[in-house]
Length: 257
Image 1 (tube, rainbow, N blue to C red):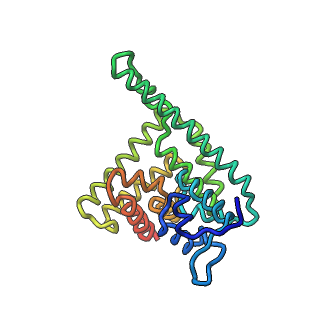
Image 2: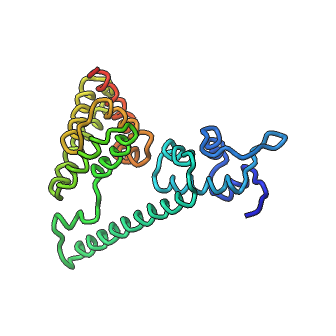
Image 3: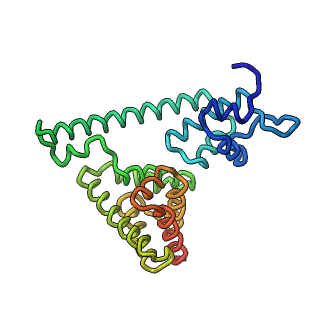
């Protein structure tokens, strides 16, 4: 790559992002340009393009901007090691989606009368949202140093069978349905009803995964809005639900205090 500099418009065109996005990345410290022209315009170098590539790969993998910032700004980071890790994550995602594609093909074949599927076979290769939540909960626990809770979650989930995961899914769906109904009815997130549903949500996590304190629950709830993996789950059920659940959880934590 040459030593030339690139304008914000050129970088936007190269990367397929908007100029506004690059401005946001600069303002938040995710991608500050290496220099500015005499007129004050942003000027990017090849090193900035390297950083942008990493950033956009993390975005495609579903990482939140706050998390990406921590990864890109980690002291003494090794870019080659980071790229190798990104490659591993992409390969894992490819394998997961191959499994999903195979499941869909088997399901379509079954619908065409070429053989039935058992209830267990219907879910082969499909992780559940609750399983992902346990993994992301581990992220939260690691950030706050709660390694005992992390170990407890790993211990419990390692013993669960398909029936357990179905029960977990159904229980979580029922709680989410309660919250979605309250949101649709215009019931404030700070209401007793919403806080009671939030408390059942906390109990669900404590019962199936790890002892979830109100403080930990509040930290996790923030991810429901900031992490696109969580936000997509809630917003698919009902627009605005991610923020509503977050607010109900925070209100419930304050009530407990």
